[in-house]
Length: 164
Length: 209
Image (cartoon, rainbow over all chains, first blue to last red; front, top):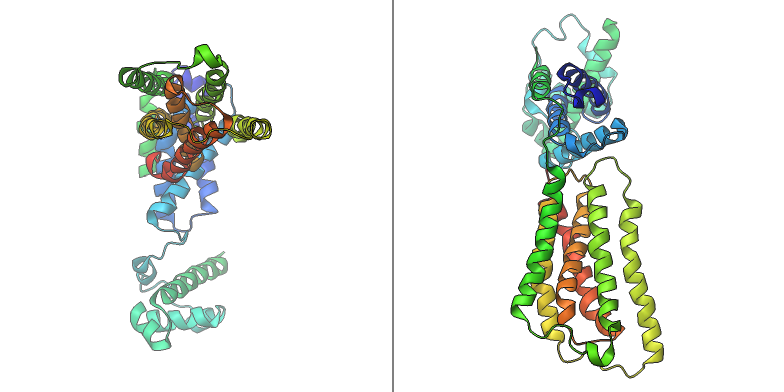
């Protein structure tokens, strides 16, 4: 950062790239969805740049950078609503037809908690919408979305583990 | 190349050298607030320093001692609050010292002078001045803070409120004929704390960046 301030743009590019790696790894622990993570990361990088005058020369960069990143993350959550979990219906429902081809789907579902497995059976196998499925088993619409979302995330993890 | 990479390139092409004058953008609104409040009071009110010949400089020195302490210490706290990653507990906590001293003096004053005339004759004018001038100076502090990057918006709003109240008191005190610590506690300290409370509540809305 010191070299960047002397006008070295290459050094500044390097600083920003390094900052983006560190902030991304911090955000990855707190933000689930990839697209959302990239949005917050980009906001953080722009904030680091526009508020770079608030970093005093000689002071450590880390606390300054993470304080801004944390502020932007909280601001992002506030804008979007309090839940740090993104319930993206389209993403959850938009599973490519051959994603689970050749796999023992029932076996996979058996590895999930029963509530999540049932939610996925209703929405992804029987083809009900989230609302129809929530009406059928008598739970709230949001609760159904949450079950499907968490179940799909877990299924993806299981499949990834098996492919390794 | 993804969007994040192109943002990195775009930002890097602008260079890391910060724009000049950011300190000035912080200090100017604070000074303007102080000058406007003092100027407005001088323009509207007559008879500065009433009773200084009879009661001496003690009352005005006490009032100014308290208010100037806030006016000088609040910008230091605001400066620290506007720089992410800085520890700010001490610079904010130290702002409570003038209030603690006033409480101590109030206890002493009440134990010595049990027959204090309260609330005095000009309390309405005092409250009006505090109510009009505090938000003005508070606005200056908010503008000043927007030049920086506060990450604790409530705390920054609270300190901006203390600055606003401190400036209002500094501007009006020379025209205040009242004395006694009870008067000071109720008609100066309390409005300042109310302004600080408003700042604490409004900070997240006014200081978001």
